[in-house]
Length: 349
Image (cartoon, rainbow, N blue to C red; front, side, top):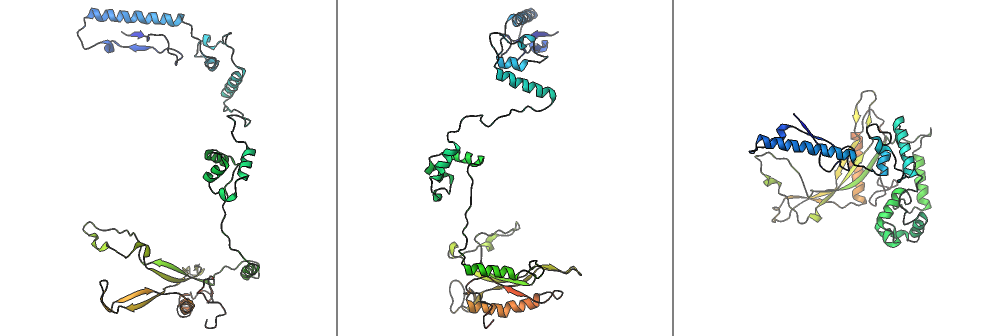
């Protein structure tokens, strides 16, 4: 046996049809001492209340809003009394047109689109002309950040960011360029022309050997190692006088383009030579750091003499030794314009 029960107060405002709750006798039973006659009387009262509520629902008049009535038009599962438009509450024509477009698009299977001419939404406080005028009055050096531009133009930074997204502002980057004289431009042009072959194609630079120098720290501030569980980290202790003054050593390198032998498939990586610019001395007396006679490695200052010595005694011989036999044995050393570098017209070179 079951009883249909509707909550008191009629239908709820946020639901079209008041839901009914079906209660079973097992849920109505309580774990307290009530006589069967009392339970039966309670069930009879609940049933009477449900009948009264249903009658009230049928007699009460529910006036939904115009928007809700428009949402209910054409719905088969909504009462017809809800779909009629009350004569005293006319529906705005704009809402009617929007609902008509939506209903036609829904029935045809197409998506619902609202065409906006670009004038919808709130009006902008700053027009495009006002933004242009306010930005032009700010010097260029004061426009490096949105915060600075906002401060000098009296326009909020969020507004400037929105205009930047809309395309009314743009972000530009300025990089320092070398101030070239006419002679510098002519030399660069001559260098580019020298790399053009007779057939009009650029040289593949297969026979160019690039040499350069690079500073390296003797040790890094932080190092990471992987140890076994039974190993201790005592040997990982490192120290120096100051972390901002770690000793550095300059290395000179010579490399060429990697290449592959088309017949045998042999690959040459192009690495020719790597040389540290250091000098070795022996400690003259004992100290807390080392005993007397210990070999000490010190960085070497680079000048034209040291650089010329490196090219003549190391790089040239390394090119001869490392250059592959299956490739044409000719090379051209290419260097930048650093001060210690020698010129092609150097006599000792």
